[in-house]
Image (cartoon, rainbow, N blue to C red):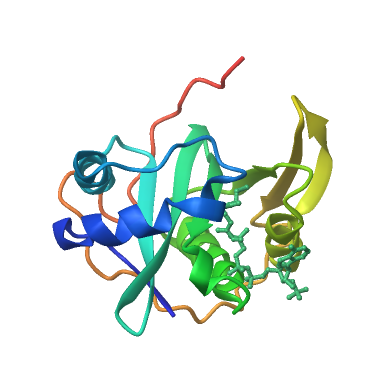
Amino acid sequence: MELRELTEEDAPALQKIYRGASLTYIERQGLSAAEAITMVSDALTGPHGRWVFGIAVDDDLVGKVRLRCRAESHAAISYVLREDSWGHGYATQAVAGMLRYAFTATGMTSIGARHHPDNTASGRVLQKNGFTYRGTFGGWLLYDLRKTNGWHPRSRTPLPTTTAPGRPPPGSPTPPVARRR
Ligand SMILES: CC(C)(COP(=O)(O)OP(=O)(O)OC[C@H]1O[C@@H](n2cnc3c(N)ncnc32)[C@H](O)[C@@H]1OP(=O)(O)O)[C@@H](O)C(=O)NCCC(=O)NCCS
């Protein structure tokens, strides 16, 4: 399992990821071909403070993990896997890899996450990566993880070595983003 940059050729694979049961707990519909292409181009040229990687197993793109800066040094993580790839530990490994990337290459020092109360598998992914449950808000279970409290750099997930066009190089400072009210 590895995290890698998305490419334009990944659009059909993204359509297969965003389908069926994978949509149950995420606020998104299935993707048209055009929307899948837009998703790739957004991932490659998106705004400062957003990092999107594909989750690949033996060259098969089975999922996507995303980090979005929400406030200075704080980002939210989200992830989705194609239904036929569930239950192999890929989401747990992908989140571990993205946390390593977040805390070593982006300047983020805390990561938040949330999941639907019925989405037990997502909760397990977060717990196994050291996240702490903070409470429920707006019907979502909220978690966080700090680089200096709860995170252990134990992931060996291969990470992207290239920087997508439009994205700042790893380690460059991320400008503050207004906290959502
Ligand atoms: C949630 C999701 C990412 C999990 O991916 P995955 O690769 O199957 O997860 P992993 O294999 O790494 O681990 C899942 C853990 O949840 C457990 N689990 C899986 N399905 C479960 C279920 N229905 N009920 C309870 N636990 C479940 C697994 O046993 C495992 O825990 P364990 O190691 O303690 O046994 C995947 O189901 C998915 O993409 N769902 C749709 C999108 C989504 O919900 N994203 C998260 C939005 S918050």
